Every structure is written in C-alpha cells, then in structure tokens.
Length: 331
Image (cartoon, rainbow, N blue to C red):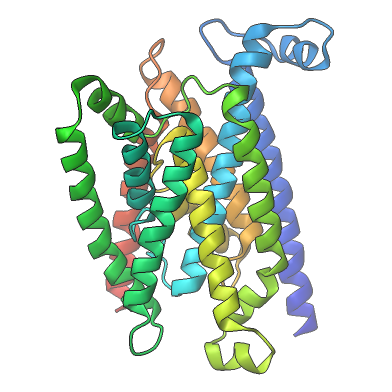
C-alpha cells in the first residue's frame, strides 16, 4: 500500500509540474498574441521593465492572469461540489449556482447602479441563496448527493427562466449589457477589476486547502469519515462557502463561464489516477482549460475576440455528451 501511495503521490507531482509548465506556455502565448504579435523576447523585456510596454503589461497581462486564476478557482469549485455530491455532474454550472450568481448580478445591474462592488455582492448573495435552497431541499430525510444534483438541475432551470424574465423586463441598454456579459468574457479585463477578486480567491483557496484531507476522507463514505474525526456538517458548510465564493467571484468579474468547473476536476482526476477528485490537479487543469479557451476565442474571428464562455460552452458540451454516454453505459 505504501508503494502504491508513493507512486500515486509521484504521479500527482509530475502531473502538477506538467500542468504548471503548460499554463506558463499558454500564458506566454497570450502575452505574445494580439493585434500585433510580440516576440517572447519583447514580452520578457516588458515584464522585467527593460522595455516597458503598455499593451503587454496593462492589457494582455491582466487578461492572462485572470484566465489562470479564474480557471483555477472554477476548477476548485467544481472539485468541491463533485466531492460533496460524489457525482461527476455536480458542478456549479449544472446545479444552478452560476445561474443564482447571475441572478444576483442582474439585480445589481437592473435595480441598483451596477457598480463593481454591487455586482460582486449581488453575485455572492445570489449564489449563496440558491446554494442554501438546494442544500436544504436535498438534506430532507438525510443528505444525498444524487438528490442534490437532481434538485440543483431543477433549480438551475427555474433560475435560468427568472434571469430571462429579468432581462426581458429591463431597459434596452441594460438588457444588451446583461446579455453580452452573460456569455462570460475576459475581454477588457484590467488591473482595477482584479485586485479584490484575486484576494478573495486566495483566501478561499487557502481555507479549502486546510480541509482538503478531510474532504478526501468523505469520499470513502460518511461513516468512515466520522470515525476518522471529520465533522461532516462543518466540512460541508466550508465546502459550500468555498465553492459558491469561487464561482460568484469569477461571475462578478467575467460573467458566468460555463463548463470549466464541470470538466476540469474530472480531467484532472483521470490524469492523476486518483480515487476522489483532488484539488490541485483540478485547479491546474482549470487554469489550462480557461487559458486555452481564451486564446482560441481571440483567434477564431480575429481581430474580433469572442467571449471565452462561447468557446468553453462548445468544448464543455462535447465533454458533457461524452460523460453522459459513459455514465449511461456504466449504468
């Protein structure tokens, strides 16, 4: 067992190194790519301050970092909820948390003045409210991950309908802005948009890292987790808060970016060969997926840049079909 454990740990370390290298390569490509191509030497000179470049340091760098950090946050959020539900379908965009965060942001846009602080607060509160409703409904007669997923899908459908109604009732200018923002986009992201979200995500990921071992214990079953000293209710509350916080923070800045949280944890788990859904491979895979999707979004209709959510939805839709087909065959 010790030999197998060492091999598993070594595989995770090697995978993490490969994913970090791939993230750095994609980040360098993102810094080079634009209306005019910058060589890697020019990028390194701009980053070191030897030859300052507003385009690289003020326009491209925030976008690249946003893709990396937001992708990691979505990957962790997906891993948290897939561990909580013990179901590969249990991701924030499937069970309605993205839709709830979007509802809160729509409220800030249509009723309030729609400032960055209001969008962030509305997204978090909307996501938390929907999460509380889903959790309370699924916890009736004992907690069940499958029940949570099914109820979450139903709540997602209802919140999507509510969001459509809000957009239809809004003024034309607000409705156009809301629909464009709902696609999920990193276009136009700058440093002012990222300071607070990065700090929030750092706090959430640090908090989740302290409960990572206990979270993996729950994958063995509630009874086993309790016997090893895991406080299930406290752990589940932490997992929900971290998952909703990561999802809502990304939604507040970039809009709801679909399917990264669904695909990244399962891809990371398969690459790592892990029994549960480990957080580090999920985070790094999420960073790679969002970085790659954003680069593809910029290239497809260049010089116009597509919202990254359009590309992630197309890729994620193919992944979802494959996942459902595999689950049906297993059943």
